[in-house]
Image (cartoon, rainbow, N blue to C red; front, side, top):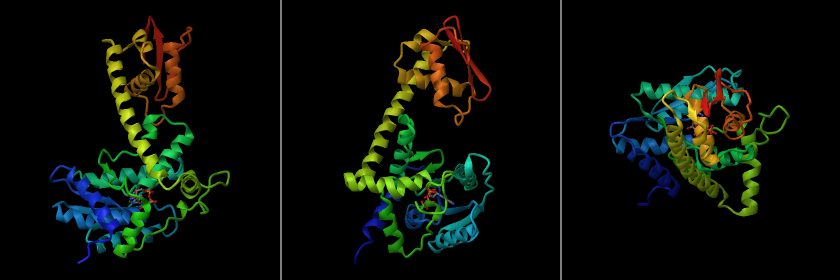
Length: 330
Ligand SMILES: Nc1ncnc2c1ncn2[C@@H]1O[C@H](COP(=O)(O)OP(=O)(O)OP(=O)(O)O)[C@@H](O)[C@H]1O
């Protein structure tokens, strides 16, 4: 008897490895868009979870932003049910005034998935991100000028979310859905020539990276480019973790009983560690992470190393940093 298709076996092994990391009684929910990657994830999970004694279900989020989205969601849920997963569709209200349609849809989707996890007794939500998604993320962030933490890409696990397919290529997951006989939905917004455009008429950044940049890099440098980019992300994640740990140490050494920071101690630290410590201090003081930008950290750093009597620095969230008597107060 022949075994499963090699890509089906690889997908199952990936899910099996992830389940083995979880607490014994914890269930899982597949976040399924109906696309090839998350349908492959549903298929692998439906096979592996019952054999590993885990409860497994699926959640499809309907963003209700495109005509026909309810049908796409219903179809994805039906395919998950056909695999043996209990599946439900959650319709969300996306406020596109918040961060544009893509960002607002993502925020609404993650909030809905977290709520579904809570309702399922803190189940782990499995996402279908692939090695190619990781490579695209790294390239996008590189092009925007990011630091190590951001170039570290998407983590395998964070909070209730897990990404068991981060080391598998998208092409392999396409083979999985073909082998299992599922019909994935092709999102037109993913196509580089698709209808979704930037304000200046160009393709959306991720679509351009996916449809033009990575294929060109792969043609020029060889087929290993996405895997190399993903490896860079893994290496940078280790670096960023180490730098964050040094920054936390620096902050606790520099902090006095009143919470203010000793400027001399900060100034003696390497810039990469000091800037991380200053960013952490601003977050601790209540500046929201999403609004705290590079310019704010630079301005805080100037209070430490380039002080010439300048006034304080205004930070997001109505906070203000001032320097007085060799101490920084946020
Ligand atoms: N509408 C949705 N409902 C539930 N989960 C979703 C939805 N959209 C995305 N996800 C989850 O997030 C992951 C990554 O989403 P992304 O938008 O990058 O992928 P996609 O292009 O929609 O399709 P695919 O399902 O092929 O990954 C998906 O694999 C899936 O696990």
